[in-house]
Length: 445
Image (cartoon, rainbow, N blue to C red; front, side, top):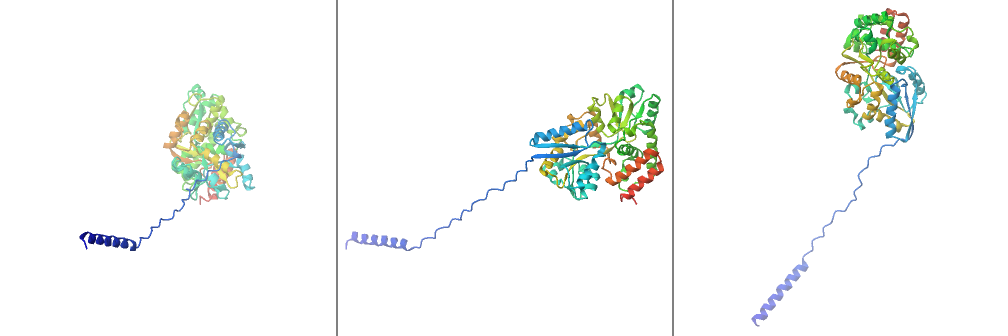
């Protein structure tokens, strides 16, 4: 066999072996691909309900300044929610003296408005929250990130049981003395800062035939309590004044006696027809120069501006005599009643009430400052800017007649005592009644 043939045979055998080996090796199992699971679309947030229909807003804002301020806030609402009609349900009467009775009848009958004005604090919480007639509005604050733009002290006033119960639209100051600058100039007077200065100015004005202090309490005893709470603060100071509402200050103490005695003296300087006038009619006496001064909350500034006056030009202002450095606070707010006919509309209204835009539209006209800390100062006049500064720096004291200091039942009892006191000026009887009101409220022993 030739060499070439042998090599050919060997090469053939090698090829055959390779082929057989390749055919005999098991093939690797095919790799399985993971099944493709369809991805669910991400959950979409539910769009907030768009309110329609009408909403009934219940308040007592009918006087000059407050009515215009409310209308300005309605304008903000209408721009945001043009499909919603506002029913402006107002009942005249300062501090809600008449409106609260109408509201009580409706709430007890299961016929609430969509939202209603109420003084923040005890007035709402001790009346309608404890009666299980309100929804908490904590969720509105959280959804709008308001907890960072309202002072902690304001949130505290609004809260009970871990929830917030109303949306404040403003902060008012109770302890303000307003005066006609021309009358003061004509009589050589400066604004009184102490009670002694007040009574001395009163004597000068009476000798000139001018009523020193305008008072209009036809709308109820709240006006008299309003003056009285400034006198209490003047004699007690802020810490002891706050103690009246938690039982640490004695209602039978000498400072309360002195405040009642000074109130009796103040009544010698007021207009004889005070029981026939409302608070704003009394303010008009100051506008006309028939009276020189009035002690009223700073909604009076809204009234003065509504009749064409300018702060620091025709009228001036100082803290009520003896109360500089303290700020008697109250706040108007709106709540969400259970069973509101248009709940979505009510929530939309409350959202406007608590907004920067809503408060900056309302307060410069109303004569109050925003409850928020981010209000646009440039929109507020010289008085309101001073009120902003005082609110930020003064000792804060809650108001009695305006629902911040005490329950509605306690306020009513104090008002009844004051009504009798205005009639008979019996200091001892009034003090006994005031002390008993604290006991009946469960605060004093």
